Length: 69
Image (cartoon, rainbow, N blue to C red):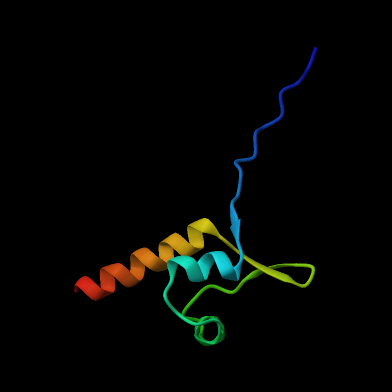
């Protein structure tokens, strides 16, 4: 008998070059936004920084909503 284990949904991680393709800001401006708390802090794996695609999408949706108001 095999016991089925719960499935963990896949998590898509993005790095800065991928994020900057969808957000028209410079790398230094991006890090300034992170430092000021305007953009979520990264997930650190070793010395690398990652963000989930959900964090990036939520930020873009929020900015889009603010610009239409």
